[in-house]
Length: 157
Image (cartoon, rainbow, N blue to C red; front, side, top):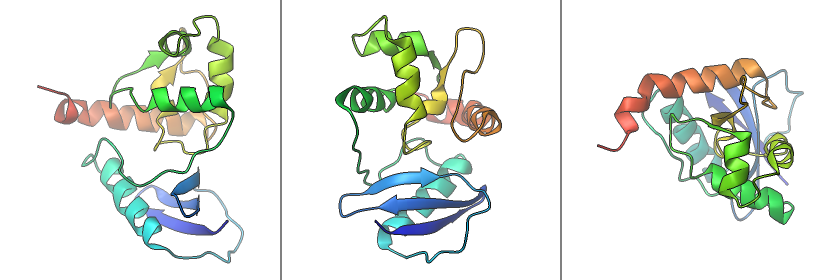
């Protein structure tokens, strides 16, 4: 699968894609040299991520290409229903998917989310704290604060 750089105001992300959509999104860090490819889907992703980071977008339209165990797919689909700027707990998410005793399994599905931000796992927190986030808690705090800043702009009236 091809990979490409996605420059944003928060740094250069890396994205993998296929014929259906974006498959993986990696947060900025010291990436080894390419070869990176270019594609129209990366331009869409770049524009949408920058709009999100600048408080101009609450949802994404870039096509996604997800694969994984059925339970993970169900969890990731439910994440897309959490409104911008809102937070729920792992237990609440487990309840929403009809598996109220599966909070730990939900946490595992979130840890395996290949498309953080696009599939907003940062909106899920623990009962007594932030919980985890693959790209790091600094990023989770940053994304939650960003959404709190612009929440009113995107909340239904």
